[in-house]
Length: 233
Image (cartoon, rainbow, N blue to C red; front, side, top):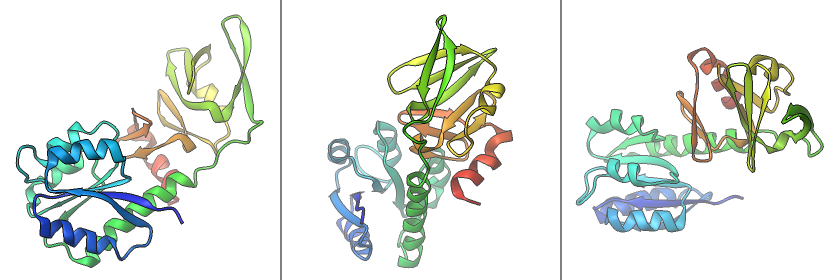
């Protein structure tokens, strides 16, 4: 069974203990660290790379919201606070959930289920077969591209830019015609200018898709189809 690493930040030791006790009920999770000092926590989060961060908002020196903005490779984040008024700001920073103290265990379970559902939707995305490939014309030659090497495709006027982990290839074709030739089990068009590989999605909201550190917008016309594809609805 995969274990998910959790880090807890709260300037109240009692609040740290409550979250830790709640987490102890779930065998899939382990607490890799905790701190009452948000500055210390920022360094630890960078070092430990947790999968899930529980974060208070009102803390000395820097707030939880400021801490979120300071994290480069963000884990999933669940805010835990006594203040309801920060909910909008929290969700604008793409937090997974917002728990108001005192946190009932029943409500805590829902937040955990949300995390697990999101992880499941990402880990079950199919990958193309190793021998699946396409040929495209670029730089006066025909290039063979393995489908599993594609991160995303960007349309620029009458061209598409195919972004791989090691290089970018530009070929003259409209993004609509290019998408027609791609297997729909592995690729999704999320915007009039973007196609993404399903198995390369690391996170998403209703507004954008993350592939590594890159955020790709989801167009209004594509939102419903995208959410249906990744959430199985």
